[in-house]
Image (cartoon, rainbow, N blue to C red; front, side, top):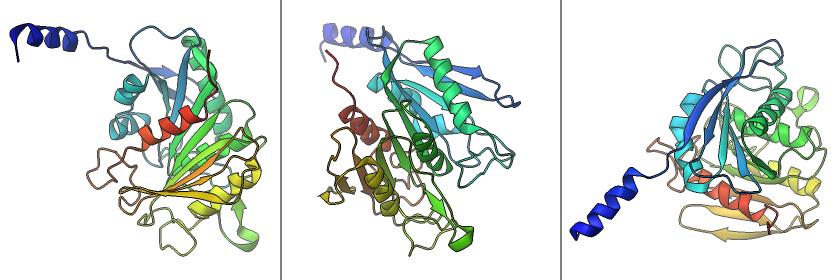
Length: 289
């Protein structure tokens, strides 16, 4: 490389933007709760930045989830603000309504609402582009928050989650959504922690990925007929827009088990779930002038 070009490259690398990361205390419901706030470098656009709230799985933490997925780097790459809340309880979980892994009936819908409000008070957010990304118990919580609130999020992505458990009188399931919300559902048939479908053997037997997709298809008034797409990494069922506002997409991938695709675990699927989710979020975002 010529000396002049090398010098320019060095200056660019030295001046490359880096996101800022802050742990924010946020007491709620009598508990000392908190979340990590990640802000990309550079000036915020006039309309504000998009916000993605990341929900970790059971026994994990905001700090571990950030490292596991490289959330700060993705926030910088795509230009969104990230909020990574910590769950609660002895093993750090979420109260998803139909399943409570906090052990204390935590008001997690209220807490996540408070997290979004707090982020909006600290930095300029585009309120038309607020999204959720959840894994495992965090995916269950993403389903619940999307169903329980009105107008707070545009879309969500749920990796290796479920919307219902149990049979008969013991059945517990997600309540009907208050309004349509676009949903991206990712799950692998090799998952041995949360069952991919009703025939799968896993630690937690619940509604499968297609059942979850059809739940949102019904409530979002989408067509029940999907457009199927296959790549070398995953297959996709995209349910055609019904009300022209929302969309439901289900992604299946043949490897990776319970891991989030693209995580630091070498056994995870090779495509990146955050990148795929971000593309989905962008597709469902209102066009700005």
